[in-house]
Image (cartoon, rainbow, N blue to C red; front, side, top):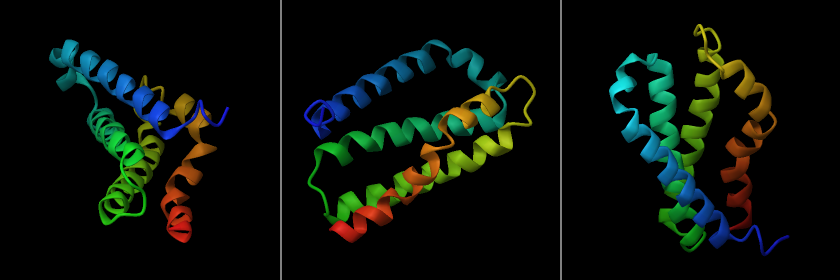
Length: 120
């Protein structure tokens, strides 16, 4: 199982996810302005997070670049968690459902850079 979840395999899966999301965004670009602002911000930041993840997984760990990307990643993840809480009030939003699904992982994702810092 550990070799299946290697950094390389996770980076490939993440890059594939990013490609699918970017294709969907390009195809739906005409509808993007109609989305609520909170959803637009969430989508944009998740694209950045997904884009940052690939070089973080494939690059050397513990370098200044890796730590900087990790801080940006963690800040955006925390911001998205808070944004999801705010968007629960948006009519027709699936935020409440996604928050219930991803709530257990949000604290650990935001604390990950601090845990990594102790190892490096």
